[in-house]
Image (cartoon, rainbow over all chains, first blue to last red; front, side, top):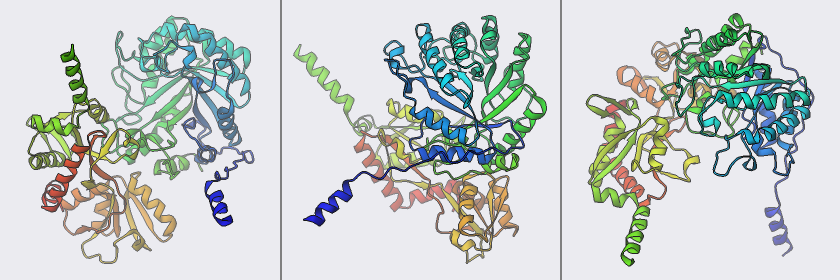
Length: 353
Length: 248
């Protein structure tokens, strides 16, 4: 009977938790400091995988990460903020010597009307969002250097399935920017990140990024951001393909820059917080894996040589916690099982690691 | 009033009925596909064609119904099935365990995983373990390259040579620059169809199963499809269709 009891006890006891320590502080070695990568650690459950991911970022020679910290996940209606997850992610990133660009967004249920999606944020909640942003900026002083306010506000999907209006986003920046600066004057506040799109005015899906940016300046937003985040996907075009207003390719960044200069904002830096090529075997916007590698390295070289106004470029995306079984898997540099893809190795060699 | 209730009840029951009932009633199997993936599916002015199209038609004959092909973009396929726009998806779709809450997969009809291709006279390379001291050609950056890199940790004497395309990797075997090539089954078989002197080894190296997809609730339809697939496999028709589009 004793043995049966012992067996039951052994079989039913919870597994011993894995203890993960931060480890000693590390530094990133890179011959190309422009190189960064977007991580998806918010979706990652296990701490050791978060640590491993960030080690791999460092070992690849990327000095920057862009990571998403959803407001909706942390901020309770009573004002309490669950800092555990961001503390863990930012702690590991800091230990690995990585510069963190934190993207914040997604509205808690209590801060938006019922039956609205997570991306819905209207002016009634701007102050609440600003409070969260300020507390985030204050808490991570010295560990998070940049914050992006929202994501792709020129797409209706990212704007609560409403018509996207630069005026609204300008108003949001006007509330959030001073709150962050008051909490942490060193925080670099990024607007955007604008999604590359050709959608015309009045489209239910979004608004052309160039037009949106011009209207953002018209709305007086220039005083409320320190840098502009943009997304620059190459799709099927080589990295060096000429830009044109009616084409979405990597060098569309130059057209974005033109708008900034036209509005007298040439001193403001651009941060490419998502970029890359896809090598899915059948997605029509993908290229072969060898071309993906070549275009990616060409893009870094081109940006370094020609775009002094670009501070960093983050490849979308290091890794997903689990396969998506879609074309998105073919943007990754590392498999969910932490097997490196040749593009990871190519970037690693490029940075001199 | 009672009649209204009966009508509503019947309508509700109808909403839950297995798609197989409707397929039988209408005599039409609605097949969703994305016609941008030759040789599995493509389209021209005359309509859709490819391995999956032939397979769908063969299944329909066995089921005693007719096919109606409905075209979607790759990313819209599952939504089209979920919203009842089609009965099945036959579009070179890989079994995705994450989707099995909402969808069911048939018995796989093709393995698109990585295969080893060697010269016709090569008798000593059958599986990856046989590549000690050998040179392996791969497509740079492709899944075969990733798989080969993993194997290189176990086989330190293995030399991996990446080429820009799968065809170039396979040509390297023909030219004796490499002893074998590790490529996906589709690229490999298409190359073998037009090139003499090479063969694929019997054992696939990785598994990437293509299967037919139904809604999870349509159990009878899935059973019928699996039964038909088995019949096509047993009578050699599945092999015939596969060989017609991909070679032996």
